[in-house]
Image (tube, rainbow, N blue to C red; front, side):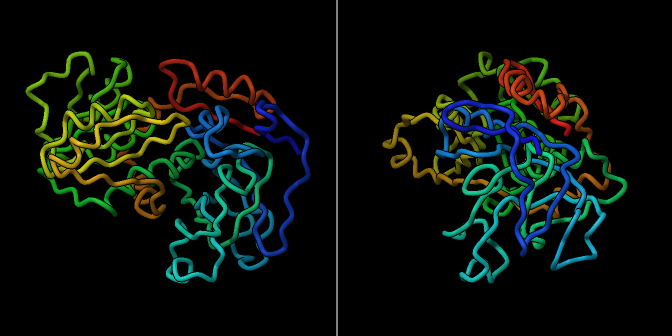
Length: 319
């Protein structure tokens, strides 16, 4: 089968064997989405080599432990745990020390014709949710993961740094129901997507110093080193900064400000799929403006270049 891989410092299309694990499901990929993490892996992030990709929707071809899933459209939780540790027994393998992560750590990913995952990772997709919307479930769940870690009430003052894919999804999922949310970014056309959903926005270059030290929670989703400095400027004393960015650089930050202002730093990675799936099923979240392009899997190298261009949002790969 064809797969988009990162090996020996290069992104390439390779012919590889169809995955075969007796204790896991085989999924035929219908559509996958290129994520900023894929782009960072291609720069050296996480030290991963193999098939890229962790956002997908597909059809189950084989499911030894759950034959009822065969023939159904599914999405998949990306963390595969050992199944034995306390975290796995509590049905939360996201931090299992022995976990593999689809397309990121120890497990070939979704930019391929087929992938393999444990059956317990698979979540059926309702008929009312299209393939193009289902691909967003994993990053939307990552945005929703903030709710698990930081209480966000209707009037919590929240600033979101970054108008890329994750920043927009965070703004769309929270900001449209909040009276106190601000999305800060660098691109008017991206900010317009949030504005159309009723979210307040501001260009980074126009951010007024009167906003400094006024937000209860600041979500850093810029994918850049400078995003953390902006978050520090905006968060109030004893406020919280939620870090969502993953990138290959080594950020510098003013630790003394964190100490003096008693700021809580929260790392936030993956979220649960059920809330994201229910949100999409209700049909109130229009994600079509976030789709920039679609490529054949065979043209995956060009798709990665396209996804890295300034201003581009979601790029799909279709086997």
